[in-house]
Length: 322
Image (cartoon, rainbow, N blue to C red; front, side, top):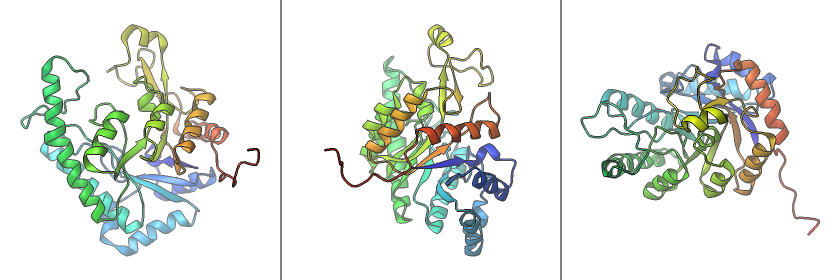
């Protein structure tokens, strides 16, 4: 496995400055945002799609520094009931697939999206309970009329452009937020759907990432190295569903943290070991969203921590002891 970094944390730096910084830190892979929620600070997608020359120049910036692109990321909500917003997110997703084809990149990371409660809705409606019955009926409508039809079409589009690894980040607020919902969509539309596995979104739901990895063996296409700290006192008082602003650190039930500051070495060793057992041998892409650590310090500490738990060598042939 290799250590990577998702670059929006350095949005104020130029592409060259970011790549220089990451190369100096010994990073091997880079995840690039192409638009929607991650922004496109380090990728002018329209410029690249319009010029083969620009694509080659762009790729050379990485190769000159011995860096690989692990995936292009365009997390957004193409199922948003606001038609203009949904279209913008959808167009960026499709452009990202086309750019991945041009650049020979195997993975595009995104969200499943979340519809509203009707064709006349203004905002997404994320269903979190099974009663009253209205919620069950709405959930069936969302999946059968919006989510599955959309992704059936988009899998076809991606496949025509050589893309067979659509890595959905399981994120609360989106239709796909846990292993069960990811596998539901994968079963409905095909094995091009897989996971951009981010443990931070699972920790606070009470999901054991190692168990989730076992469940998703063969369907993990990318991995985010991000942690979550659970505040046991606030959580005991209010539970895990928390709508307070992320800046209200002392009042929240949980916050995102740099790896190692939410869960210990044993937890992350279990995650890495289970990934290997599940056949995943690609990237651990560090995503920094820690309000208590600067991007530079948070990244350095994450790299140090991950190097202690990561397997980097190929397995030797055979078990000499058995």
